[in-house]
Length: 629
Image (tube, rainbow, N blue to C red; front, side, top):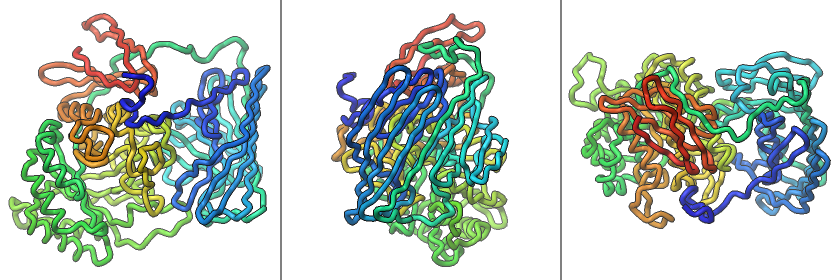
């Protein structure tokens, strides 16, 4: 692999600019795109980032033009200044003057925004991210704008709404003897639990969501904010916190479970290409097909006929995912879809149904949209689809399963918890580019998945649980009117296409996703389609050769081959860098290891009792490897 050509890794020749590492004694941070990230003290992450962000009306993030950048580093201090420019619609503009200084265990980030034209925005100001590993469930002190101090804890299970409001400062322990205080001036801040969106962070942001948005920054009126981070270090000197450069060790853990079925999502627009790639569908060996059906998008009887043709060639199970319009009575709409299914000859094993409006997010302070009670929707589904399969007898519970949840993300499921009484399974998706699309942020979202699945289990117990389709690209935007176009294959938040799906990054992400969700006991996991922008096969006009299997295909094929087998936990000393699990079948035991980083990783495999001595692996960037043990 050529280091000079990143295409094999990322599916694009576009490189991410490396960050500038800033150091002030034991305090260090990466400077990239005008913001600070990976802020550490003595090698331990204190904050995931401090960013000044400007959002548009669809919650897309502006990528400002930065000019007049000045950086100084000397005598255990650093300082920098710059001006950022955002160009909005209708020739509107916003400029932000920034200064950042650090030294003596303190960091101050100041920003002054001004617009000569007036500027509409959903949010303009600072965003501070706290990490979740080692922080979730731990102690924290919150100072409110009225001076009141609250001693509490960071949420462990994911909070649907803001855990802290009216914030002026927040203090948390970094390690034994070290604490960090982040003070926020210039506006009222509040925190949301970003694990809802699979971000690996708690986010403190400016301007409460209960206030109206979008809002207008008036012309000529400066808007100033300041973030001050202060470290209190009460340790004896000369005790480094982290040993840098140590190899990753992998050792057997105690947890075991059953590998989930693997699904492929099929949209009506990809049905023809899915039929043409039938030989590859058999090669992948996915146990389930998930057919997406949305009448509001124009899907009708023709789509159901295409699904039926594909289902006849599939040896496994099929699920029809219905975004019910709810423009009329749910009984009438469900009966109409059921009649079209009978006419098309489509007899799925299960229906996953949700009101179409529930795909859109309802932020705090907003009014819930009109929607029939979910109990009514589920009852209508049971009545309409009971006799879709011919082996159902009268007065017997139909063997077609009815599932519910959200066709969007865990956020929406957490905020609008579905009644489980008439459901056979619960489902939701995730997406890693809701808030950020850089490589590090996307891969870090894997850290949030165990918190998501534990939160679902806390709500729904041992109910059958399915996740997906969960892909890097966003198939639908619950937070705005559209997904973002990405014609040049860049790294763009909320984009409907993502280049990394074509590269080894996407392969590693999919394997990491599967490993991070093993403990959830999923019934089925869907990480891709067969064809199309979310597919395992490259299409016409794409950088990869048309019809060629993308790297992610190897991961999905491996996972499908292991469905129903036993997995055993493998504990990584650095789960942000390397993840692994062991699969146990009747014939053999295999170890599956994945490098989640752009760097080569040395991995030491601790031997199991009675097994061979320790082995050492070298994994190349984003490499996924299967080893017989």
